[in-house]
Structures are given as C-alpha cells and as structure tokens.
Image (tube, rainbow, N blue to C red; front, side):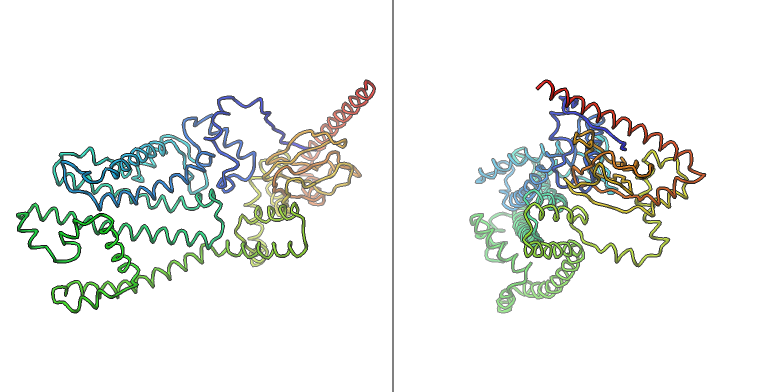
Length: 547
C-alpha cells in the first residue's frame, strides 16, 4: 500500500544538534522555499550540514534571517558614517579627532562591529547560481577573498586613532581607505529582499518608494561628503606647498568651498550648504547659480561647467528613469500579474462570503502553485508541439520516477509513456486524498510534501515523504477497496497515474516479472495492514473488558 516510510522521533535527535537549531536550515526562513520544497528535503539538508559542516552557519537558518536585516542596516550606517568621517576629518596627524570626540567614540564602535562582522562572514555559507548551498569553510573563505569583501572591510575599518603622528600623506591614504566601504553597496542591494521579507513589507509600491529614497539619500550624501573631503584635502595640501599666511590671503573669498571662512564654519553649516548644492546638481531642480554666475566675470568657469552639467544632467536623468522603469516593469511583470489575480480572488471570496479558514486554504494553494509569479501554463504549453511537450514532461518527472523502486527496472520506452500520462495534483494540509473502504482507479507518487496514512479504524500508521507512492493496491486487484486513508499534512505536490496507463505499462511480456513482484509486495503489505488492524481491535476489546 505504501513505501518510503521514514520518521525520526524527537528523542532520536542529537542533543548537540538541538543546540545548533538556530544556525542550521530553518523551515521558517522565507528563502528556504526557493531551494527546498518539502520537509524531507529540508531535513536531509539539515543532516548534511550538521554532519559534514558543523563549524559553518547555514545561509537559510533562523540566525541568517535576522542577520541579513542586521547587515543591511549596518552597511547603510557604515557607508553614511564613513563618508561623513572622510569629509570632516581635521587634517592633523598629531590629533586626527580634534573637536570630534563623538565621532571618535561612534567610529571606534562601528569599526569593531565591522571587523566582527567580517570575521563572522567567513563562517556563513552561500547559495550558488544552480540553487545549491555551499557550506565548505575553504570555499567560503575563497569566495570572500575573491570578492574583495575581506580586504575592503579590513582596510576601511582601521581606526584613525591608530594613525596619530604618522606622515601627512600616509594619513591621507589611510583616511581615504574609509571609502572602500562603498564596496558594500552591492551587498545592500542583495539584502533588500530578505530585509523586506523580515519586516513584512509586501507592497511593490512601498518597496519601490523606500528603495528609491534610500539610494537617492545615499547618493546625495556621498556626493556631499566627497565634495567637502576633496576641498579639505586640497586646502591642506596647498597650504603645505605655499606659505600658509600668503596662501590664505590668496584664496580668501574665491569660490564657496575654497573659502577659509566657509571651512571654519560648523560641520552642520558646511554639510547643509554642500547638501543643497549637490541636490541642485544631481536632481537638477534649480538653475539659479547659472543666472547669478553670468553677472560675474570671475565665475566664468563655473558658469560654463554649470551649463554643461545642466544639459548632460537632464539627458542622464531621462535615460536613468527610462531604464529604471523598463527594468522595474520587466522584473515585476509576473509578480504584478500575480497580485492582480490575488486581488480579484480576494474580491471574489469577499462577495461569496467565504469563511476565513477556506480563504486561507485557497490563498495557500495559489501561493504554492505560482510562487507569487503568475504565468498561464495552459497558454504557454498549448503553443508547443506534442514532441516538445513530451520532452518537457520527461525532463520534469524522469528523476522522480527513477527514484521509485517499482519503476526503476521499467524500459525507457514504457517509462516515457508513464511520464507523459502523469497528472499533477496539489493538496493542502488536511486534504483527504484517498478514503479507506472506497474503490480506486489511480495511484499517487509524491514529488514533495508529507502525507499521513491511517488504518480503516482511524489509527495513524506512518508518514510518507518525497519519492514515496501509495494507492497501487486498488490497481492490482479487481474489486479491491482502499485499505487505508491518506491525508496531506503539509502542502504536497504529487502525480496521479490512472489504472489504464498502469496496466498498459506493466501488463505486458516485457515487464511481466516486474508486475508479479509488485503484486507480491502489495499482498505482503495488505497482510501487514490486516494484522495491524486485527491487533488494534483485540487491544480495544481487551481494554473494554477490563473497564
């Protein structure tokens, strides 16, 4: 009646492994479903991790679910802080933190967090492009070295307090290394999705608005800080090249950012002035400087540069928006279709006044079937030739069928015929698949998921997992009723094979021996089920007599 039984009791779990639960793969991690579709696959991955790679952290663990969001906010904070620190450095090698005691404490704190994070990254696995999870410590270290993250994190986290009394130019180089933290912008982009999932931000509009304003803020902040930092560096270098008094007299009043008076103002004033000027240049929302510059011959270069920047900026902004809208539309097209379908579905359920439990089951079915990306499978496959359809079916089901014992010795010709006649089914938790005592005309093969098998009296006998099959008894014996009830425990995807195609495959000269072995196996299972049911009845009678 059934095969593929395997179930671990809680007492069988290694106590050491139980302590590592938060560091191994977790069923609650929202990214797990993208790589493993059933509890069995997750359990196998957990066993592989704990037995072979106990000193690494699984990227789909409960820890990494929260750690990804932590890294997102940490990297954003570090980039903002490091660029600010670069811009407002007091260029004094003997006292690099003069008038910046608060920045000193904050900088040291985040430098320590960055170094600790860098070390921790060397023990966290990663997902490959082929959806395999790499947990080897050597490969994780090699990947971090090749990506450059280790070097950028290390050199950008050197505290400036360690640079006291170094040579001025050496100090410039080490201080500028703080900008290596910009390498983590790619990490921020990668961590947006898991962060939104943890914070339960699902609306595409909200996601787009948050991401847009975050990166616009970071862009303008970086441009502001780099602008101020370069001006300060230029001021210090030129003051070293010339006599300080003479140089200060020469540059006083020339240009906003070369003005000594401006550089001696508070950090807030300098930042705000540079901020609004960069907003004007980046967003092209004001061109008053072009008009004012035309009134002075001294600012002729600024006038020409502003006009060129204005024209190039307008063209650049148009191109960027066109590209962004195209990429956004292409990337979210399938997801937008899914959201539209779900909106219509919710309106339909509301109009029909479905109960909450039924609504939840319907939504679960849609989310599992389409994985939040809607596509019309019928229309897509209807355009294909019959040959291509069969090739697709063979590709999708061949590995599954070959794992099942009763099909392992079937010829390739009959195997292709079976695969082409499999009907996919999806069952939700609690769905009744087959009922004991009823006649059946098909068997089922589990691709992913878990089902529970009950005896006719209602006793739970076992669980069936991936690559298991059940229901073949009703196909082998005439007028034989189902000997057990099978109910889905989790969302399960399986294939249905009807009696006609089953007989066509096995009731022939080529597969006659296989057919007879299947019958013997089914008879033995029926006998075991009958004995188990009889023992249960006897135990029940004895209990009633004792009562």
